[in-house]
Image 1 (spheres, helix red, strand yellow):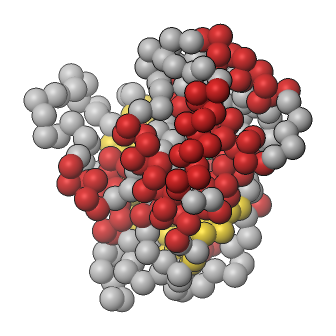
Image 2 (cartoon, rainbow, N blue to C red):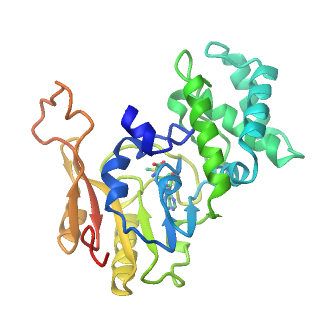
Length: 299
Ligand SMILES: C[S@@+](CC[C@H](N)C(=O)[O-])C[C@H]1O[C@@H](n2cnc3c(N)ncnc32)[C@H](O)[C@@H]1O
């Protein structure tokens, strides 16, 4: 991982399904010159933050996450760190104090905030002490991830990642967009632009939300709509890359496998390859990056 640290910034959100560990297999396959890069399912922004482009669009359907990204992109790193550390201290948060966590979660869910930055810092603080650093909301968009007792906390690694991430997002020309992917406006994109998609995976069970606003589950219908959008981008000459799994936990994604035959499919080497670890199951996970161009094409 030391090599990775030299080249890539890690999101300070420790996002479930985050692509940090495989960035070295994804980013080198992107075109070298990109005008507008769209990270359509931005999440922790592990991908977009590491891309070179004139404009980088962060899109996600979770409003508080988009607001947090806006806060990071408009606030200096030392100020973010100070506000965060003061907040952790003032709220008496640590790995053991479940009461302090619940009190802050309650405040976040029911308080009328006068200041956007206070709200964002409370949200980020909660994430850092949440089970698996997961971001989850219920039906009424109330934050409901449980306490990450003895596991999750603000630590020197996160501080380092946060500093680098905020520095970078301050510098790049980032546009934050809060849309369901189906409502995103692709009409202005052309041949120099690029759309990266890292949607929830149909055949695995990442839990991003159990709430409303159409983000409850990722359905076959969502999957098909996304594939149609990508076909449409392809017909207009817009390049794309899609991260996904063709096989996982003994399940196959047949729709995606069939669709992918039209395009270039790169198999992502799993992160266990360099260790002695071997899965017993021969139907191992097949993680892929699907692109509508070949590496190095037109360059
Ligand atoms: C696998 S995560 C992306 C992780 C990101 N690539 C990273 O490395 O940090 C998928 C993201 O898609 C978002 N999402 C889920 N349904 C969506 C939808 N219908 N439209 C837009 N974003 C959606 C989730 O909120 C989640 O943040």
